[in-house]
Length: 398
Ligand code: FDA
Image: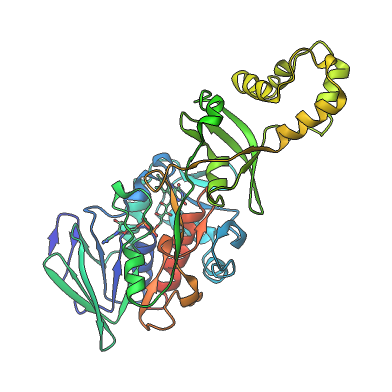
């Protein structure tokens, strides 16, 4: 039976039911189907892979060549190693190439489609030939007895000995994102690490109104957050801060903590004193404007409060100003929340899952993969790589 996007060939009874037709769910379904499992994938959206479609500005940043476990945030930083080690970015690139999809490296190891993210969804659907898709209906209930999982969805109830939770995290609800994975995991006795919006713009208080007035200004900075440092662009917005460097830092940020921004990443500590000796009549604002956008230079010089020519400042004051520019501390009031967050930090605790197979240790046959799990990648294709790798791990084990 084919119903719109639905592909129900009535292969029931199934060996595997996958909840969520996103990146991780479709990858797991594909691998399970390759292993001759009868697979049903269920999604409440009418079309699969909606986040893939809008990802990477419509071109899907589908992996990152720099993938390494330390580029993922998790309460257990070792958990992702096994799956990532067994399914590398090159494996996904080989799949993409086998489908004739042209790609390019944009920057920092980030691989994008030359054409459209639609190609990645089409590829996954093609790879899922033989998988039944039930789209457009919410999951009403999930039961478990006699080693079988039953899932009621729409007008149907299906059953299988394996159930894969791949319903992602709550980021961007308008795309169909929910906290369903966490509720279900809790029902099966799994713990959930507190979910927080990540890769999300930060908001500033009225004390930083000066910077909000710079809305639209972007500059290269280094942000420091936790043990990580990100050298990318920061963007001032009317609500606060955004741009890749800030989004990266947001994943590590906790309420009440400052975010450190280095506005002069390449400058030595005595650079302002050196400029003073060479050009004593230059103002601080003009000196800053040689490397920073003019409006930002003006705002920073105003905050530093060194009026007049550099020649009139002591070396010590200039050293202090240079130090402040390298370690500017913004204390955000919050984030723009799940409505604007690309991903979620936290999720189903890895404590209860096998890192080899993603199966719940205490509930044989139950798996959790992708963003639903407490593994969150940096910006730049890492989150899809985790979705593919964890999907392959579960699909190979069901
Ligand atoms: P995903 O969210 O993809 O899939 C979950 C599926 O479950 C969805 O189809 C949803 O409809 C379904 N679902 C949810 N609740 C349900 C319920 N109750 N019942 C039934 N179905 C349910 N990453 C990256 O690496 N490179 C990039 O370029 C981008 N770009 C990007 C842009 C934007 C705007 C966003 C919001 C996110 C990104 N990401 C990204 C992150 C990336 O999209 C994300 O990490 C993956 O899609 C996660 O894959 P999953 O399959 O785990 O969840």
